[in-house]
Length: 284
Image (cartoon, rainbow, N blue to C red; front, side):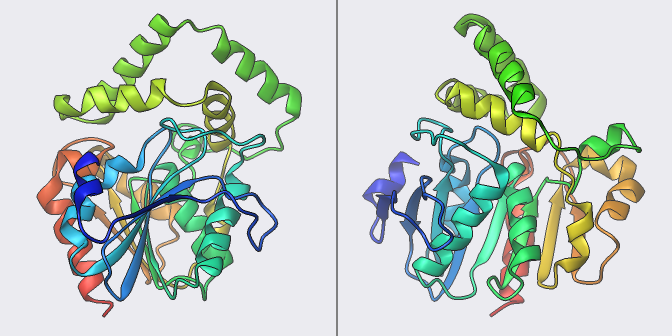
């Protein structure tokens, strides 16, 4: 997002204060645009807010965009005890502290999970959410009997220890292989790998292990705001399973991309941005 730094209306801050929820707010925030409607963009696992660059370019003339990068990811300093719950509460606290009225949340992957969680727990805080290729429970696709469990600290420690044993060359290879499975746009591989390599290994291990165990299906019925879910093309083959996870609720609309993989904003750009624009235009 280097080119955004030179654009009028950019406010780039890293906020490290104590917020109303009692959690230290340690994610980074960039603000672009000065529109009346605020949009908060939350990237996915080990990703920089730069993942939203093209999206923000399309939105900044009419909206105020707050672009997050979560602590410990893509070069942002890590926090001591990262967790999905604390990150959600930090975002809620940020919205409250900055007095951002009725924002729309756009989240990709883990960021989409955070958007779902926030909308379910704070129904009057946000105006709507857009979930980009995130499911309430990815693990349930592979194990229909999956149940979330409480993770003991020693489990996290063991997984982190295993992650730390991976040398940089092997980690690079794994990150590159992962990138090729997540986007069909080969020009994006280098950035995805760079963000992974510049992420804190402890945060990487902890959040990967925790998010793999999260099941948001029980909270989906609590989401009352308008919700648009944009899903990668391969998910269309298992649409009934996907729809079941979202509860077939009337306020949650599911749409499937025409091509590409997990990074829909890269792989099916025109379809993706049109879906978002239509959603925003329906909420003046």
